[in-house]
Amino acid sequence: MRLGPGLAAALPAVLDLFLACRSRPAPPPPAPIRLRLVAVGDILMHQDVKLAAEQAPQGFPALWADLVPLFQGADLAFGNLETPVAPTTGRPGIPFQFNAPAILPAALRASGFTVLSTANNHAFDQGPKGVRETLDRLRAERLVAVGSGEDRLRAEELQIVERQGLKVAFLGFTDLFNLDLNRKATEPWVRPLDLEPALAAVREARSRADLVVVSVHWGNEYQRQPTKRQRDIAKLMAGAGCDLLLGHHPHVLQPAELVEAGGRKALVAYSLGNFISNQDRMYRADLFPVAGGDNRDGAALQAVFEQRQDASGKPRLVLAETSFEPLWTENNWGVPAARREIRVIRVAAAEARVRAEVEALSVPLGGPEAPARRAALLEKQEYLRTLILRRKRIAETLGEAFAAR
Image (cartoon, rainbow, N blue to C red; front, top):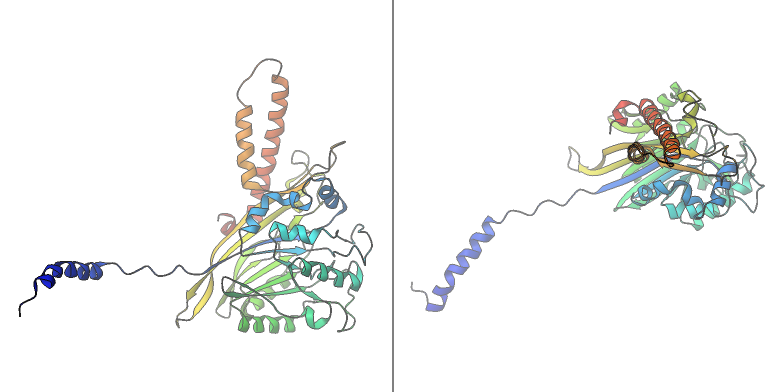
């Protein structure tokens, strides 16, 4: 069979195209879906914290400006809101009975927060009306509140947030009340940690969501180790289907660990410490033992979950990355005539910056500026020492397995 002149001329090009298609590598598989969650501990509204926000040009966001990129860069950012926000129905806050100004929810939302625990021992500080007003104000800013509701049914309603096409279930409980005003199921309610109903709720969440996050207000104040009760409950929660357990209340950091039960693993942060507060305001590293600053330590948990196929070929979210970033609350209490300043910083970045400043000031320089330069150097060296002590203390508390990452 003879080919026509036109077809014969085109044949080499057709063959080249065929061979190129055969030799072209297959396209790479799509990247797995990843979900990043950031969590911090207690957001406390002491009087001086509110004063610092009033006096800061940018208000509340200035108090944690270092953390805003971290929160905004996450799919979900969580904190324990340990205060009502009830300026209309409540009284002004006093020691041990908190109340936050109306601007706080908007500031939290603008900073990148998305989910807040409202189940804690201060939830009823402004009574049932304060619970209702707090929830109204949080919803107005599109913040998800877990662990309380206008009635019992809504307090126990499973909160599911969708991100990256995935369903993330949040549950909130408190093991402690300063004032337990849960009276009628039809009135404002704060969800207690009743174990069997809590485990049933986790199992239900497991059946309805890709990821299950449980917030628990528990433990003993100022103790750096979890109680046996905390450890026992964490194991039961893991077995019921919890993927991530976020603990708070002790106002100090406690260890983190992977807990395995029933063929499942859960990351448990027994206490994330304070996020912001006025506690340990008098602490100075040169005057106090290192434990004297524990209330000013915190950690920002970053957990990355990745969708992978299990043995049966079904997609499942697994914990792919974990890190705990050390945080420290700067506090200028006792400085006469100074504007009140309280702010949370990222310790690693601050340590690198202060090291560079110490190095620059260490270059010998004579003349009239020398005494002031030396005073500045001594101040920077002392602050650097504080940051190093706090970083080591936080690593020691969290556990080497997590502090090293």
